[in-house]
Amino acid sequence: MSKPVIATASLAGCFGCHMSFLDIDERILDLIDLVEFNKSPIDDIKTFTKPVDVGIIEGGCCNSENVEVLREFRKHCKVLISLGECAIMGGLPAMRNGIPVRECLEEAYFHSPTIDPADPRLMPGDEDLPIILDKVYPLHEIVKIDAYLPGCPPSADLIWKALTSLLEGKPLEIPYSLLKFD
Amino acid sequence: MPKTKPVLTFTIDGKKCRTSPGQTILEAAKANGIYIPSLCYWEGMKPAGACRICTVRVGGRYMAACTQPAAEGMAVENDVPDIQDMRKAIVEMLFVEGNHMCPTCEKSGNCELQALAYRFQMLVPRFPFQFPVREVEPAGTKILLEHNRCVKCLRCVRGVRTRDNKTVFGALKRSKDKKIAVDQALASALPEKQARQAMDRCPVGSILRKEVGFAVPIGKRKYDKKPIGSEIEKAEG
Ligand code: SF4
Ligand code: SF4
Ligand code: FES
Image 1 (cartoon, helix red, strand yellow):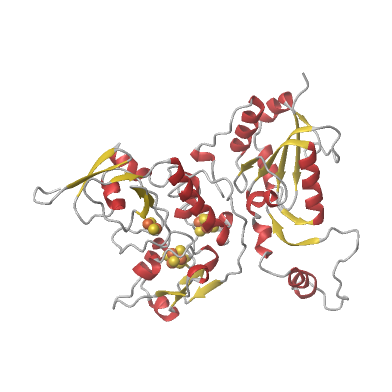
Image 2 (cartoon, rainbow over the protein chains, first blue to last red):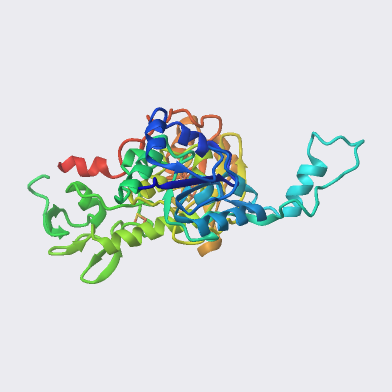
């Protein structure tokens, strides 16, 4: 029997959730026995090459590319997991949600203290760049999500527990000590 | 309980409870080792009935356990799935109607709203996030008012007073526009102990004593290991 396939992505996140994933330490050796990775920054596979059993996404959606990747994951993955504060609630990137996009960009490219006044003021607007969304969206407000693992980042133990429960076909029960929002 | 005090008996989820007349359902439950989740309630302070997390059912009617006195023969429903889910929904509503970014919050680990979310196993709110525009108010020299996290429990309005009994906090407007206001001069003049008390009284990270955040390490905070309410449940074993 072929191994279950996992894919992961970081959208508007900081890669902290992925780092926490790697914090399963030597259990990663068990994991590579148990599963096969497809599209993921962990193995650097850039495009889906087969159907995936479990997709894991960190970070919310802040631009059009995030939305595209998320929809692609939804299409290819049987189970889609929203991993961490930013994926579930928007997190730190969502702190801009009360500020109009133009104001954010002007602050970053025109008014920030590191702008050289001698330089012409340019705001990136190339058509190849993803478009910034009006606000940062949690994943479940864009596609259907099957499971949520909160935390900033979720602990390695929680990620491990969720994965092993899923692979064994058991319902995920999160003990009190592993349910944290920080 | 002294013998002279009259006693009344009632039940919570079928469990016999004894209390004295005048006690609210919430206080009576606590005295009998039963936890009824609450948020705006503060022991010893006049209840406000503001959050409705303590909602129980008696004879098919819903009531706030923190304001309703227990009565002889009452059969209170507390720990039943539909009521627990309704309480969880209120917690979720509070999360989406403010801006609660726990990883950056000074109160995280000691926050009663977060602790309720943990207790109810809230993984994601069922309601869409509102991301309201609210401000951080530097309320004088000692206190910071973080409106993004305020749950309008009115504990500060009811409970924080100066030595000459002036209120320091007040509530402006009503319903979803309700906002806490603070008298900056009075707040700055609060002695250190009272300023800390104001912070402790706030269930969330809305009232902060400046310059003292993140003092307790992760793992040692109030709700890191034990769920909110477990101290009450433990009392009775
Ligand atoms: S007040 Fe409580 S729920 Fe809100 S951000 Fe702070 S810790 Fe989280
Ligand atoms: S500032 Fe704190 S104590 Fe006052 S109403 Fe808001 S949440 Fe309650
Ligand atoms: S605790 Fe009773 S209404 Fe808030």
